[in-house]
Length: 295
Image 1: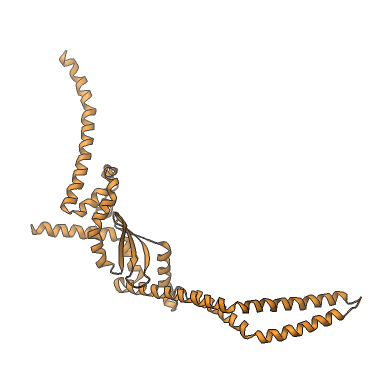
Image 2: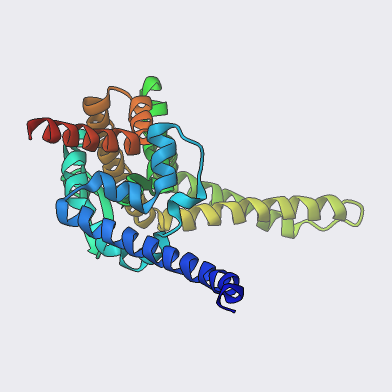
């Protein structure tokens, strides 16, 4: 009888063993993460939170879904892990990207600022867990355009400033031409009066056409008078716009110079951004090997 029940007991034990194994794997994963944090082993933490990325980027291995099987167990503490990992990462970035500064706006989230000069710009975010910059597309595109325009000795806002300046020049011409317009209006009013005094059954169509032409010219001059009356306020606004655009060009020039000082070119800067994860993790691996050799 006992021998007959043995297969049934073994069959019942199989799911128990499988469940126990899965639970043990989860416990082992969390324990390993905790031990890595306690030991200050940032490299191992990066491997544990995204094993697929780590093995593909550094070891050129094929994707394996089992590598990230337990990650969901710690996603709720990712902000705290990001905060923890940021210390060494930002120290590294301070040397490699000396023009970037970081502000932790909430636990584990970091804003990037370009430069420490006046009116510096918020340039995007630092994703600590992915070791990646997430630049503002608007700010990045301005900087990219600045590099593209440099060979032509132009700045980002050169065309816009020229356009606004041309508008102010036109307004100044309207102001200067006030006396000429007054003389034209006086002459046109005389013509309008003469036109009104003419009465011909056969030429009535031509007289009406001439009258309309005179009225159109007077209307145009009246519009120019109105523009001239508002010109000083508009020109003042234009000056403020040009000042703002010039300041932005100055900031962009600072940023361009900072990148050239550190990377020589915008292309090198972009290439380094793309390899940042591998570069940083390789540095961590090298430091770990040096430490192990010294023991």
